[in-house]
Length: 191
Image (tube, rainbow, N blue to C red; front, side, top):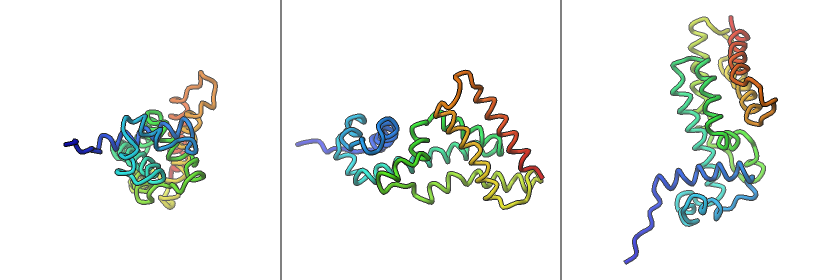
């Protein structure tokens, strides 16, 4: 009697990681389910069983990225806005393929794939909460916390994206630039 094929959490996570890496390297149009399965050491049956198809696999990979990012933000939330900013950069540098998959926009142009709204917004909740906490401590202006959070996000996101794209001289001091930007964000929104 043949042993049943088991598609466990490990296989599922490996498929998500491989998907992000392959899409980052080859682009969504060139990645096939067969490529993903082979790189993950499994079969296309595992993909169909666990996700349904390519669009669902890509959406799951994006959602997985937002979950991981959100966890890193929640872990850093005790350190306030500077801690969240530093955690943003660390996470992006440790997960460049996922970062580009989440924020690059290439997927939406190719397939019906976008993050699950609740998953994506949940990942940004620690930033909004940190803004509200800073406002309560009179460390930030009392403007709309969502507007402030989006402005801060745009600042750190832009710098991280430039760093990942290697838009610089190799000697560029990205950690120093990033720290200066975090300080300028604090000054810009001071009461």
